[in-house]
Image 1 (tube, helix red, strand yellow):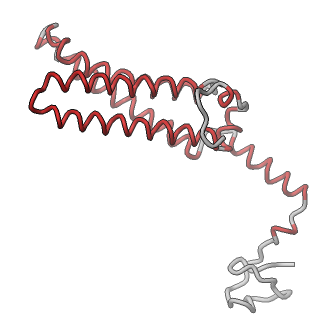
Image 2 (cartoon, one colour):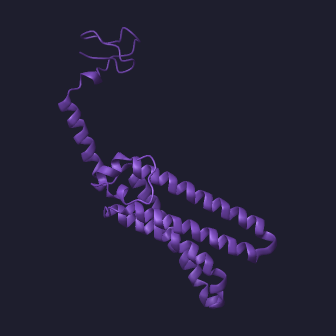
Image 3 (cartoon, rainbow, N blue to C red):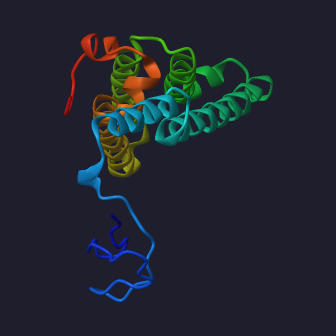
Length: 201
């Protein structure tokens, strides 16, 4: 028994076109007719596929890798200025260097944690992300008092950075909590049990 892949209507034996919608026949199995063994087979195939790093999880790892490389580049650029400006430069650029180190640490820790399947990776991510948001907020507030007339611009940039950080940690936590791929890939749900907070789990 075959069904139309376009509208789902039952097809006559040997029909080349669907009598309901006229689409060329491309016999598709009726989902209701799939037995328990076929369902178990499909589930096993999905789980086998999810055991490797792929999908959105791989995309995020690549993004963290790009972020870590960009952070290293910026850090080297800042450090190269020491030879020209001396150690007095530390007081000026020290805050900027710290605000680069923390997100870079988040990227590196997440790559290592995902690749090595560290069962507490979600807790690590949440802690480091909260630290990152706090550092951005504190450095922004301190900078506001230094720049004087440019304070509104700096304050606006700080608020945007903090807001983006909060949205980011919420969305990533939601993904990690709801993703079937993450559960199968990690081989444990310990990351949910040890998380600081869960969303949608």
